[in-house]
Amino acid sequence: MIRYQRITPMEREEISRRIASGCSIRKIAQSLNRPPSTISREILCSGAAEQKYYRAIFAQQQSNKMRHKLRGNRKLDNNIPLREVVFYYLAKNWSPEQIAKRLIILYPNDMTMRVSHETIYSYVYVLPRATLKRKIISCLRRHHLHRRKKNKDRQEPGTIQDYLSIEERPQEVSERIIPGHWEGDLIIGRRNASAIGTLVERTTRMTFLVKLGNQEAMTVRKAFAEEFRQLPKGLKRTLTYDRGREMAQHKLFSKETEITVYFAHPHSPWERGSNENTNALIRQYFPKGTDFSNIPNNRLKEVQDELNDRPRKTLGFYTPHEKFSELLH
Image 1 (cartoon, rainbow, N blue to C red):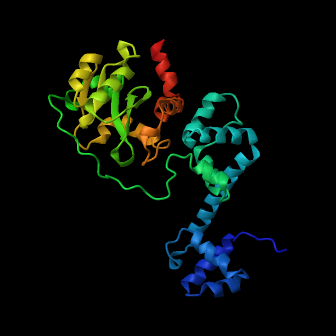
Image 2 (image 1 turned 90 degrees about the horizontal axis):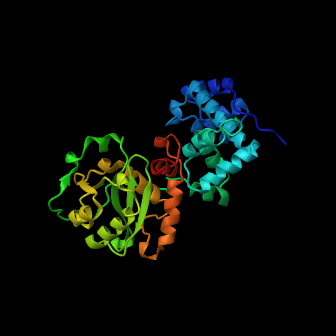
Image 3 (image 1 turned 120 degrees about the vertical axis):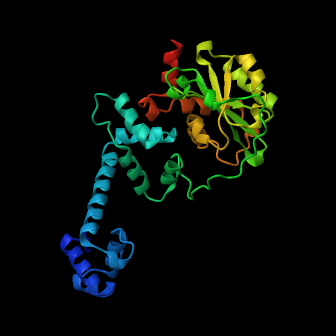
């Protein structure tokens, strides 16, 4: 059996020269005693947009990069305990970066339990096309095959009367220094017929998922007020919301909870960035088209706990639960 040998730097120089002189792939292959498919694959993997743009130096750099990735992959092949821990947290929907940084906290003195998030990504995507690979990729946050359309049509907001604009919100809220300031929203289900409420604390990213019978303002007001009732007064100061009609009873909500509600500008999701990012994480568990009327409350709370037990980059890879618990003691 003939053993395959990698293309050498000298062969890449020869390929580059012969392409420049107008030789065909078949003739180049004959001169190098290589199969034509090998030359075609080399040109394709070099990163050149077209055959005529092939350059030996760039092809060699690309080859070195790929070899480096493969060396990283062997780290997870050879270190079984590390691989098992990585797979465990992937199954809990942690991102590769969260896993890599969290390992430093979990194993501060064990240098064998170290891996970069790039190595994890590389390992996942070089796995054979099989059930294991599909299962792991499905755990990654952006596992969809096609890019999702932006700015999809959304339910038009109703008129909110007598509201406080986000421009009137205290500066301490923007600076995320003092806890107790929240952001809220709804995640809409299949055919706009169902929804759940989401509440996120701005400093700790602590998240509550709220079961809703419908999207009416009274229902949302009562459900959100009940969720906040369990918290001490110092951890419920303000709530920043969009202009959705479900918050039309914000005045009564503030009276019941002593939480001041501020409203973001229309079509400005970045003004509630923590909530928008959290909603994207929640969509890992409840993709678009989910009928939330069929999701029991105990399942919502299971997902809530998983989200709050995931390390966050913005928290130094501590979890929202850990940071929020510090405030309760």
